[in-house]
Length: 368
Image (cartoon, rainbow, N blue to C red; front, side):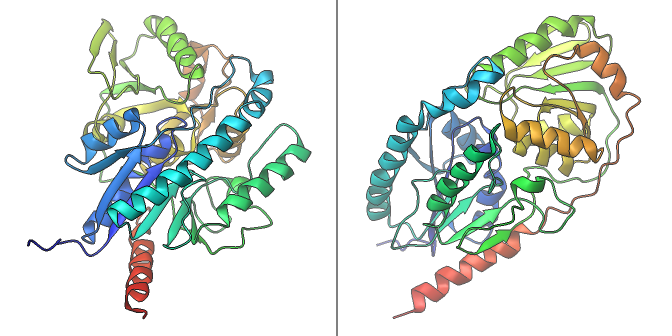
């Protein structure tokens, strides 16, 4: 019989609200594999397609998403989310049933859940990843209720990892640094990015547009940019963020549209671009800042978290904020003279916290 070369098996499962939760798990999977851990992943077909391209041959399991639908109108979004609460609750219940089976069948030693509330287990260590301990809503009373619900689920885990800095100089502000923390231990593990800054490359692209986020707002932003891009004279690339399809088209002399790039190609493209235009989703923010890029952040309408992040970062001049209603060409011209003050971020803290969970597993294994 061939003995398994791995000492531990770790399940990593990100939420399916856009691909940001998925891509920020890439550095975690890398760090685990670097300490000879067998990583297995779970997610929707789109999530698995992306991760399998990054980690060919990785063991993977289908896991239904929450499939939350967003409103086209900003004012209706809170109510649109509210009426889907029963569906989300059922998804959490289904996750718990699925997890019991997968832990038993695959002999999982540790679970890392990026914002999937149902993936806590009473018998093995489990880590919950979130940058939102405080979840912004248009109404303060609703925000308090949501935080209680949020902490109810988080407190069922062993540890809570926050992908942000611990001190006053941080990315997420009040979102990741509320007055009251969960009851379980909280670790500020630093920003998570697939990318590592390693010298400057000459700019060959003026504007790089990264389209991301949940529908229908993802397609609304795509259509707005594609309808305006032909009036922009500088070299531009629009990356659609559709990993399941291969597609590349030059729509005019100065602009190319690409469906998807894998991490190495994407990092090179970002480094060769002078300005990045993207949603102010947290993963996009971490990745852009990790490469010290000038950016224009466009919050998804009605997503209070993204609106807060864009405002918070713009106030520090770490990015420039663009309203979804702003004219694209005028905004790009303003960005050319915007006074950016982008800090240097050291994103090398993750290994320390991976060592911590390895010690946790080792102590648990050696305990009679």
